[in-house]
Length: 253
Image 1 (cartoon, helix red, strand yellow):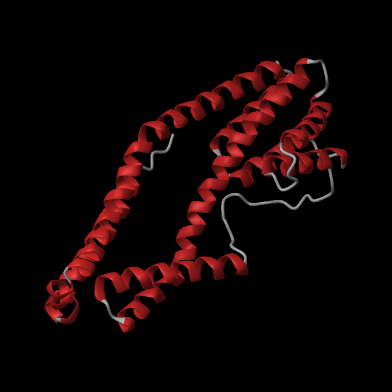
Image 2 (spheres, one colour; image 1 turned 90 degrees about the vertical axis):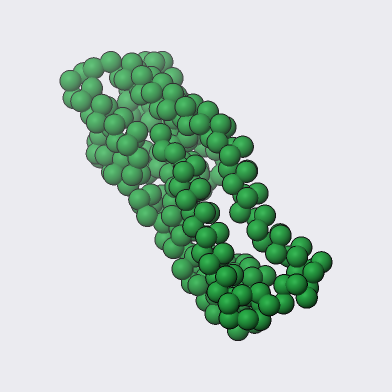
């Protein structure tokens, strides 16, 4: 399984230099093209493209949420496997070792988050660190309430000699139900999100169409101060509509 056990702090996402350059470049090209559609000015387009330096920060937040969601899904699978091992009569420590092996086959990519985390937990158990301490560290770094709740319940049950199988299974069911509800909500919102994207693209397509079909008619819009002021207002309204609609469709479960 390898020895790659670098701890990840899931509460923050730090881009590599390559990622930052690629995202900044991509955003700069997009903003340049978009600004040119609205202003037909190389100078304004270049000035607007400079705003791309802020995009990596926004993208980092999106990648952070995506990584947390993926970790949550993988953790649910880990709990099912862990419950199976514990119900077979194995000790908690042995169950974690078996689960780490099963997760490796379930997620062959060694960079899978849950595989890494269970490898870290197993390594710490072998170093005589208690399961509770290893899980507590994982829970804190995960930034996920579901994992924190599981660790809290696990710690209480482990200290009091509770039914660990029942604790793990119940936690798996709760997390699974939350994920099911989230998937249903995402399915219901999928059509709305598609409509949102279409509505955001339509103004740009209309301007391109008018520019191509009636160039003389659009000339005052691109060459006069008043026309560019109108375009600037349109750009701000379009940006506001994008962020508002994105916030509305972003529902946390």
